[in-house]
Length: 135
Image (cartoon, rainbow, N blue to C red; front, side, top):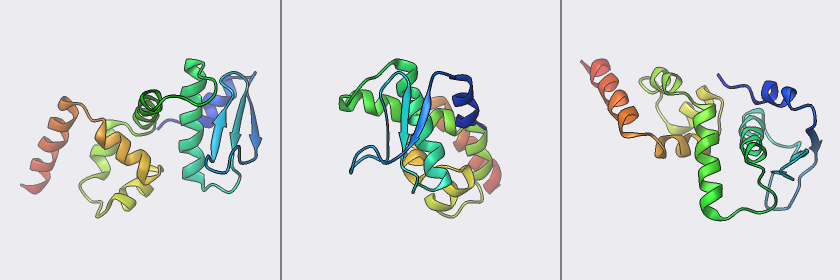
């Protein structure tokens, strides 16, 4: 399991400011040394938002990004937060997207991003596992 707080610890030049950065954004980064996180977020929301902002930092993104970049960042963060193995373990017994997201310690949006970003090979692997479980 990816632990964004451990990753953050290695970035000694980065500080977290516990304040909502914008009325429509619960998290943001300056792309260099600061990450803002809304203190009202749940633990899973903080985990997801921090990972998202760490991806922006990794790429040096400053300011608002175009939709294509945001899409790529969301996909990368979702992939970091949810491994194929974790998804394969939880999918067979989960009864809803919310339940699956809760088990994986992510938001439903991040789970949706991960599912949308599955490669063909990953989809085939999950389908094969589903066939095994139903047999």
